[in-house]
Image (cartoon, rainbow, N blue to C red; front, side, top):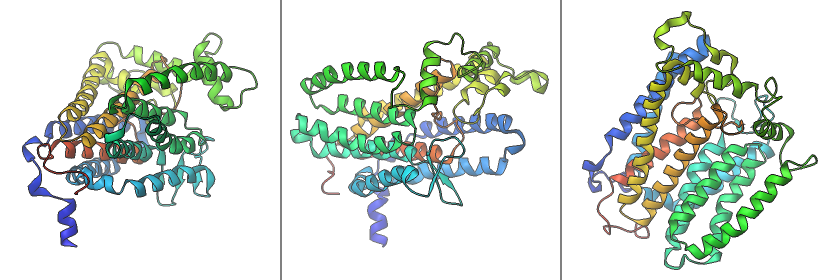
Length: 387
């Protein structure tokens, strides 16, 4: 048992000088901002004990996964992939699935806790694709490998999509595209795939706008058509996004934080401000200056992801870091794009700020893995196969 623990937590082998404490500090600052905003938004429902516990759990998860060698973690990726896929399927196809009154079966109800498998699936898909590309790197430039990689990502995506979780499905597809682009699979294969995918996407977009389309549910279609034609939908499907934009604008330069409780808060007219629309109260409370500072913190995370990819000791670490960076980049853009009405309304949490156990676990796991990539010894010291 002791030997097994030493194998997983190889403290002496790591380059501790490269442990990125500044990244942990950035995550901690975002967590504090989240706690403050949630305390305002949730009011009497807010629990300070739970907030402190969440931060402690998050830092603990980062610490644990930063100490687990990502090579060892990827050795078990077939098991992790099967478990994550089955959990995604179980939300819709088993009695454990829970719609929470939304009509979308995105959660598993274990009685003592409710869990959203799609959040963990994102991290597992990143590890799965990185492992596949690593093992196939000697003969990567084939259409066979392209289709296998696509299938590995699209199988769990299919089960997430039938939950009616379109946004998480799109995130995984973006991760797939970015990792394919950085894998070295070749321009010929990527060019051919793009030549086929772009017209197909255009046809699908045309099809979903037809009256009798079967791909999207009615409320999903209404959100897209309302976004395309906002005129006449002010009190309908665009009501929430319109009030979100008004709330963000009312924050002006410095926000209403210093105005106290006497100032009117427009975000009270917006739903789900503790999760999908948390950027709305953040913007109104902190204003333009506060939003820019928070975006700076997000930018530091994304930049550090791609720096970790550039400095990774091997191809496997590089691909994992690229996947994590792509996930954060798109989720942040998509969430803020929805709250500012630049994109159609769809539910997607804002990393490190939105409330939710599943999102917390997956994001902290990803940061821990990223830190482990940074403290690995110099290139060529070990290989995936010999771990």
